Image (spheres, rainbow, N blue to C red):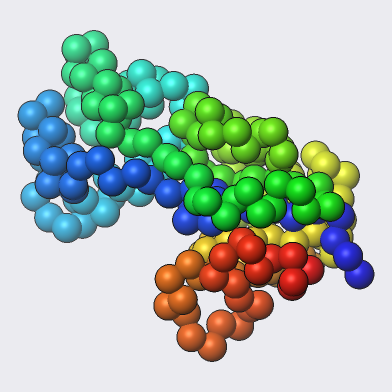
Length: 209
């Protein structure tokens, strides 16, 4: 049965971060505004916090404010603005070239992402797909409620939908458990013996559905 809806993950499925600076530059800036990491666990905790908060922010200034309020006792407005400006300058996304191959696929399309809407809104995704961020769903993948929100919003049954993503644990397993078909996009062809149908480019998608 042909699906009615294809749901795409964003990061490493439809888009990627342009490498403007290295990790050491991020950490040097964090230290400059008073955020220091003593252990690898500190870095992991901060990275997870950033990922969880980003999708709920309306703009970089708001993200800087809620992030610094979590990690510093009394962040001043100057530090908040400095962090927001730093992120705005150095965290920039771009679509993969093969995204153009899915624009005209004869199915309804949606994007389910943890990214902030303001960060990817200018990429043109909403010209062919409905965009769902944590601001809309109130949940982050792999929580099944995030997937169900998309399905219910678009009035689609799980068996009528396909999920395409690059993370087996976050994108594909929860979708499959709900009854959706799941397809792994493995752009660097690193996953051997995938338990899911696999593509290395969005060009291949039309041949699998």
